[in-house]
Image (tube, rainbow, N blue to C red; front, side):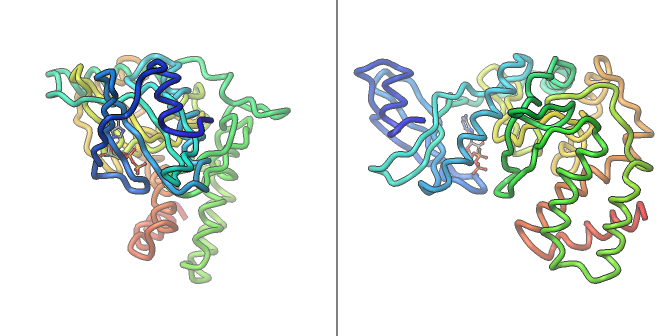
Length: 300
Ligand code: ADP
């Protein structure tokens, strides 16, 4: 935890280094974003929020570091998080990703890299104090601005029911009439009829819509703004398709490392969408209700 952006800069770039220029970057959903130029000539990317929201950045930094430690996909290096009293903000400072045109094999390369991330050893990420399990994360974090419960569980179906769908359904109750409430309850009771235990747990980005992939100076996909946990790799694929349109070349490349059971995935996909759409309903309101109800009716 740093007490100012300058303190983080000095610690990472050297004692005499300071911020000489700051340009605001548009496009964030929740935070303010800046590209800052340092006296060393380096650029850094800094996100800020109100001083009380420091936990958003501490958990985001933990998630970025977990993804980066797997070493398979481009993930910005985190310089530090903290509160800056002078600016009256909390902040997260990281490597600035300069963009460049995509390489020709952008999607194939990302397919291979994401599958390698999903295949990487991830047991150490699901130990939380005295608790451990196969699925979850060492601490709770956020999906957008909503809290995300990562309490480790031994089975994926229990985890997805208790830590993903249940809390979002409880928050969405105010939008539900009694018949929808009943369908949601039945889906939770019968989740095991529609989901299956994955062959292996995977470290997931957790919020992999197209806006959270940016093309770096190497022409490859870099991933940002995660809601990291250990889960079923299909959940990341589903989010890429819910708010994005990855081409077949991506899936073909991914399948060379993790074969996708296409029929089974098609049947399960909407259940992964349900979590994200419930979260959108809770964050952005009513306009997501019909998509949520449609999915509940599809399975029940
Ligand atoms: P929020 O948390 O508010 O959703 P984002 O993480 O999505 O913010 O970032 C806001 C904007 O900054 C987006 O346009 C994104 O593409 C860009 N961005 C995010 N991280 C970096 C980075 N490390 N380097 C360069 N640009 C970035």
